[in-house]
Length: 191
Image 1 (cartoon, helix red, strand yellow):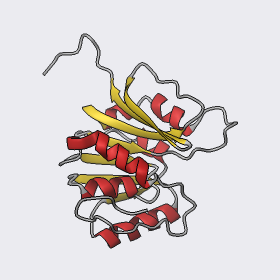
Image 2 (cartoon, helix red, strand yellow):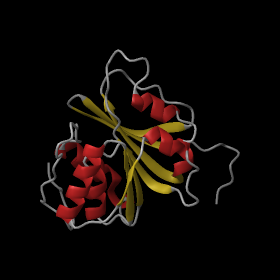
Image 3 (cartoon, helix red, strand yellow):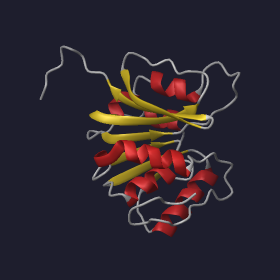
């Protein structure tokens, strides 16, 4: 696992002592190719941040700022180590994503949200990915023109609530990457 391009290009990233499933280089390359110009000066929120690889890649490519949220101390330590290696700066919040999403959304929402929740047990009633897209407060954290990039287990299919629209998707091994935007009400004003 390494930074693909930008100011930190080629720097290897670590998962430290954490038992993580980082997004593969191939999947990250596809994500950032799809996002294109959205990265420059973007404000990033990284939920279930793990190693921080997605935010670090975005910062290396010119993102304005990143807030990385993860509750696991091993993940937070890996993020700190990776930020130090790449000499990039970001805010790290050690907190449960679910508790974070219960906080009031920021006055200036994020341009991009990366979310790579744990896959968990296939038998559990609702995956964390499904729970996330159903979370009623999540849209408040995203700029109305922003994008949610969600990595999930390939199967089962995600039930997309009415608040979201799939713009693009891709399969990478056992993973599926979904690019979601918020649906706008037909009655909302265009500014």
